[in-house]
Length: 116
Image (cartoon, rainbow, N blue to C red):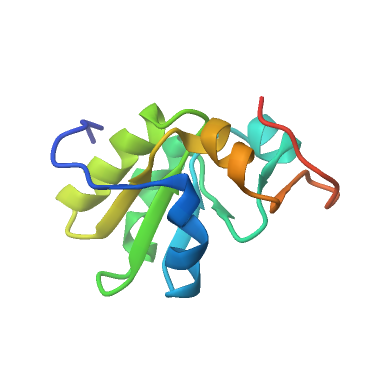
């Protein structure tokens, strides 16, 4: 499986909560230590390396917003998912940008999270 960045659609961090309330699912593709330090409260964690083996768990009728630290890994994953026939969108600027606008960034214990 090759992760490219062609044909990518994006979502701005300041619009994330609207998309989530509309039923979009947020997928965090960062590594475990990054997730543990801080993640969006409503995100599901699937590290980038696990996406190909988990691809059949995604539903073609659902919408997915993909997030990483800065937007590069999530952009590649979003493009890969789109090529697999899924509706996926990259969160512009990743967790670095989202942490500036969201109060829903928590660590593994539910405390205020940080982006590493």
